[in-house]
Length: 164
Image 1 (cartoon, helix red, strand yellow):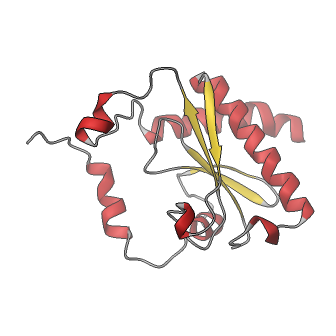
Image 2 (cartoon, rainbow, N blue to C red):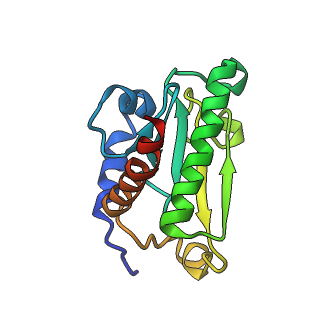
Image 3 (cartoon, one colour):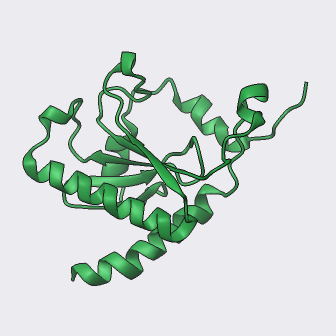
């Protein structure tokens, strides 16, 4: 059997038994290295275990389960954060398309229950190959640290300047 060395996944293995919400933790820790940017009502962070390079999640700062629980201000801010994230990813990674989705509840495929979040997954023609189907392995071509630096720098350069 071949082995793919992926030491960064140990964090996933050791944290799965903890009951703390990753989104609430990211909200309260100002130096969280997964967070790309924060808005008045939401935050955007890299998925530590991405489906594809650039996989981000946008979530409300309030711990909510359903879209219907959001206020109008939170909804507008959420979609603004999604659009900003999409523009940043387009600028940095130049994807040809995106999967953008919400899974509410375990039966709908939510991996993190209890805190609403939106997945933004950049896509390229041909980014699906034999590795996941035959070997159950997805190859991610860039480190999370490098991508985080690129996204936060681009956000600071473009969006922080225009919001002042």
